[in-house]
Amino acid sequence: MAEHPQVFRTLDGVDRNLETGDILICDGSGPVAIAGIMGGENSEITDTTRDMALESAYFNPLYVRKTARRLGIRSEASLRFEKGTDIDNVAFAAERAIHLMQEISGGTILKGEQEFYEKKEPKMIFLKYANINGLLGTHIRQEEITRALRSIDLHVKEEDDAGLVVSVPHFRHDIEEAADVVEEISRIHGYEHIPATSPVSMVQPQKKTRKGALLDKIKEYAFASGFYEVINFAFSNEKEIAALKIPESDKRNRSVAILNPISKEYSLMRTMLAPGVLKIMAYNLNRGAKNLRFFEEGKVFFRNDQGHPSESRALCFALTGKEREYHWRDKAKEYDFFDAKGVIEGLLEGLRIDMTVAKGTEPFLHPARSADLYNAGLKIGWIGEIADDVLKVFEIEQTIYCAELDF
Image (cartoon, helix red, strand yellow):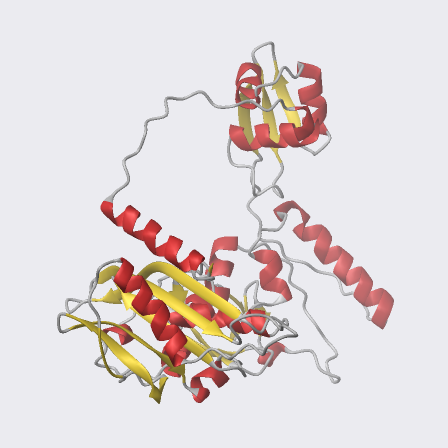
């Protein structure tokens, strides 16, 4: 493992910032590869390479996955090792690789090998026959259960009338407990042979909260106005925030960072709904849909003055294209600012919320076709045409009108 933070250049010529604890493959002079992810430029095979030492190893999937995600590398090696490989096949894999190298390139195999391997005993799991059929709601016979397990290399080590002990091979990283083995039995037995039954439980009527009733009313209005609901991940990234040119003093620029993001595209919790809606509009526009009306309701997240996460709800509307599809008799007009404004006015009027309109100040909107929305002197949202330079970032070539409300 890396004993201290350091910079290491990988095969693709990129300098990687390693942290303490990252697994490295080293020779006598230092690291030559990031284990299970990518080799180093200093050990690259070239046209002048004559001698080569081969290493075959098993790496902890958790460490490989965490390091690969942090470094932003998705290599063939990381895809394999982060899912877990078979530790019992490491020696065979090395012998096979050496054989192919010698057969294809005509190299000479030298004697000598060194093995560092602490043999691990296979995991043993005990199952009761009654629990198997109890979980599945079936009446599978004992011999069918043992036959199903042996067919997928889950060897039965001990067996009696009550249950059996199953040996789990090392390549089955997905089997951790008895329920996992029962799932394998159901898969081999056939899901179509498991009877469908309804769960028996007491159903208590739930009283709708005031907030839930309000959300239902908002969605009913949106559907009646011809909008389709979209649902995005509650994640964002620095590129989207930079594209919207949000000032540093604005709370929407105080994002909550995710410690273990699934990718760099989802490294922050979102502070606005509009970027996600714009991405969905871009997806649909690129596939030939030109007249779109979308809305999204969801949570947004900020860092407060103490640096702690806080959350609130927001509502976003977006529309582009024409009011209706082509008709031979008359020509449908393009959506404009007043169409979007009318949607928001209709919503707030139905909710009995007073709204005043002031000159728009949002940097990501067209200055002449935008407005800020206020209630009792407090800004509750914005509305307007998305600026051309912002549309370019989202790869949109069509005018889009958008509005977002805090509530």
